[in-house]
Length: 201
Image (cartoon, rainbow, N blue to C red; front, side, top):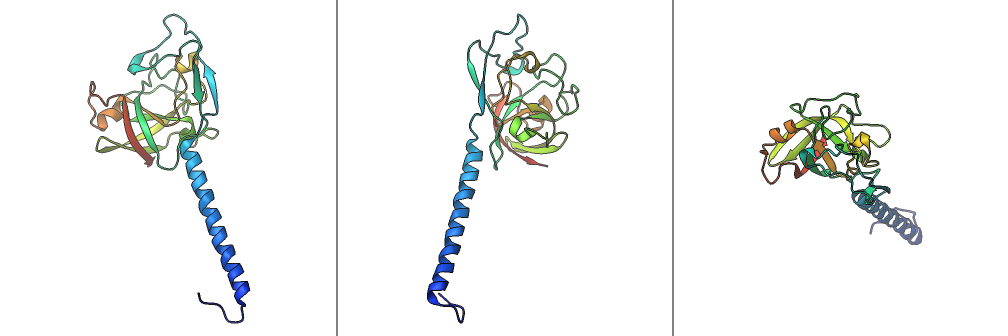
């Protein structure tokens, strides 16, 4: 341990201890921040109601809300690894995506590589990823897709959300074009539900 000239041993040890303590505190806070963000617990819940006759859209293996069942809601998404579940979504009129895309209030062609992100990733308050590209990696391939919509993790079980439950907090809801670009054939075990990673592109 090398001391500066003119500094007493007690002063040096005191300063050294303070630096060690601050570094330790910083490490603990960083660990807690990452762990808390990765865990990202529920922020509330939604109670399922009976969809009106003929209004339960089960396209792309979508699930409709069960009356009386409580579904967790989330305002956050995991961070920083961006490990996600890739699901299949229809972005056109009368498809399982529900209403028009949130970013531009339009329906979209499913032959275009586009996605909806869980609320936390989409931007709970500022929609920060609207019309921005992300790079999705899965099945040994990578595809770039534009974020056009939110996979709402805060609400569900209503007409706007096609009477489907709130999205989980780790969903990349993708058009058919994304699945095609990743080389996942329809009818395969992975199609419609696959683990992927993604980053901003």
